[in-house]
Length: 79
Image 1 (cartoon, helix red, strand yellow):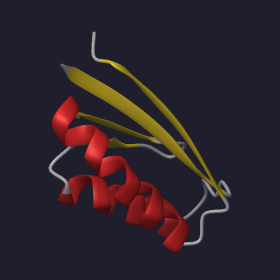
Image 2 (cartoon, helix red, strand yellow):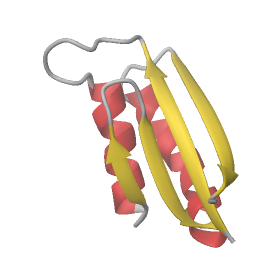
Image 3 (cartoon, helix red, strand yellow):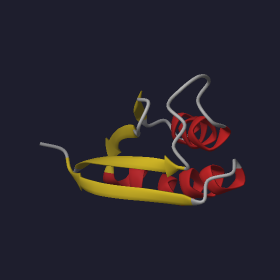
């Protein structure tokens, strides 16, 4: 089953260069081989269940290591 996860890292900083917590989370998702769509307010990732679910802890760890004080995560089946 294909899944979609969307995560938002905070604090928000939509002006200028994306913050490290957002780019590090993106990097972790890319390194896990997920399809990624990076946006100014959040990142959308897609992949098979057995690929996406095990990658999420690394994405969260990267965000917090990059300075996030909160990460909001939603996961759903890909339509």
